[in-house]
Structure formats: C-alpha cells, structure tokens
Image (cartoon, rainbow, N blue to C red):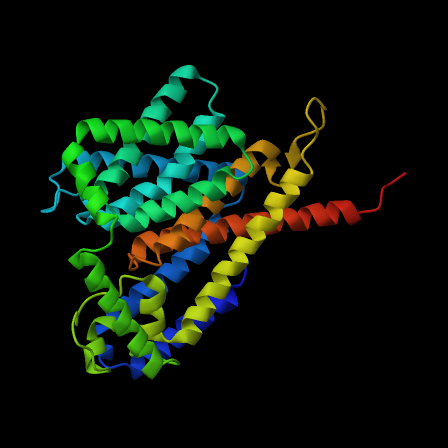
Length: 358
C-alpha cells in the first residue's frame, strides 16, 4: 500500500459521508464511483513500479504526451479568444497538461550526450513553452515559474538552460504572434471579467466553508452551492480552485486528510533527495555510484524531476479546478515514487545494520 494510505482512505470515507449528506447526492454517485476507481488505480500503479528505470520510462512518456498536447494546440483551432485549446478543448487545462512535461523534457536535455538529441529535445522544449504562452493560462505561468525556481535552485547548468530556452521561447512568441503577446500582457493585469468572475466563485466557496466547515455542501456538488448558501452570482460554476472546491464540497477535514497524504509523499522524496546529494562522491573520486535505487545520477534526476512536477501541480491547483483523470494520474506517480524510495531506504538500513562476516 502507498505510504500514508490511511489518510487516503479517510479522505474517501469523509467524502462519502459528505456526498450522502449533501444538497443533491444523486448528482454525485458516478463522480464518487470514478473517485474510488482512481484510488484503486493509484494502489495498483504504486505496486507495479519496482525500480528507478520504470520511473525513468514513465517520465519519458509524460514528456512525450505533453509535447503531443502542445502540438495539438498548434494544429487544432484556437478558442474564441485566440487561446490555444488543443485536445483538451480548454486553454487552462491544456496549459497544465503541457506543463507536466516541461521538467522531464528539460531533465532529458541535460542528461543527453548526443548533440542531435539535445537539438531535438531543445526544440521540443521551446515548442512546449511557446504553447504554454499561447494558452494564456495565468495559473500555468505561475506554477511553471515557481516549480522552475525550485528545480534549478542547486544547479547552475539548469539555470542557464531555463534562461536560454525561456528567452528563445519569448523571442519566438513575440515574432510569431505579436497580437497575442499584447493579449497576454492584458490578461496578466488581472483586471478583466475572467478574474472578477473567479474571485466571485472563490467568495462563494468561502461562504460554503464558513457555513458547512465539517462536511461541506456535498462531495462533487459544488455546482449546487446556491442550494445551500446565499450567493449573488456565478451559481452553477466549478470551483476554479481544487483546494477551495474540495473544502467547500467535502469539508475541511476531508481536505486535510488528502493534504496529509500528499505531504507524506513529498517528505519521502525530499528525504532521499538529501541523502543522494549528501552521499555523492567528490569530483574525481571513483566511488561506486550504485544505490538502493540503482544508479545515483539517474535516481537523483528522477526524484528532482518528480518533485518539480509536484511543486507545479500543487501551485496550479490553487487557481485550477480538478480534472480527475489527469490529477490522479500524477498523484499515482508521486505515490509510486515515494514508495520506491521507502523500499530503497529500508534496504539501505538493513544492509548498514547487517553484521560484517569475518
């Protein structure tokens, strides 16, 4: 079972109670069934990931899928506001799907030894950044910025990579779509009707939390919030914030149970990342690079990359509603990484404590 699984069970239990006590439980039955199915898939995913090479291949898939999403944005018609929407058919969702692959793509650029592969990966990375820019998703901008700072905080090479690719993407964006750059600048002023509507939705969520802090208005019933609290406008809309909508619909205890589960995954990853960095051999020293997780360099790349994705994900959900399949796919990745790390730490401890035979 994933580490901290008891908190995930608590989250599901509280959500079920909230659903049954909600304002319109009949509207949430199928949503709750999907929710339970996603938890079962998370358990299966965690059990199937047995070594660091599997995680490495999963990150390759994430990067390639994100590139495909970016290309779909350029190929398929844009939304009515000129924003790329791609296969997701919604600019903010498309921005998030592309952003999940930014950090794996950048990691493979840094690890690649072939000049041709570096060129191809660099072009792919630039394409993805331009696509995110043209989605005009402010949440994706903020999430990628903070996750990028987190990812490069210990690496001068990564700082140079992100700076170079970011400048290249901006130059390309500015030369190819000058009008859209002006539109992006207007959106970043946060003074349009979109920002005002989202602020109202958040106020609606706060009203629901204030009135029903324990069980909320009902799991997966945020769109029926007007039946539970008095609101002035924006009735029937999604929460536009995973955390607020979860607290408003399922209650604060349910949200805390979920956050505790995710905190356990993050703390496990942070623990092994520090161990890998501290135990790294000095430059020029020919010490074995094998660890309980396999090759040290690969293990460190994987943990750093998954942590960066997790930082982006956590920030983006502040201003973005949940897309259940996408979110739970990534939650499964975090749980699998944390479990693999925990198994490695256990093996390392057992090896260290084993008496040396004469």
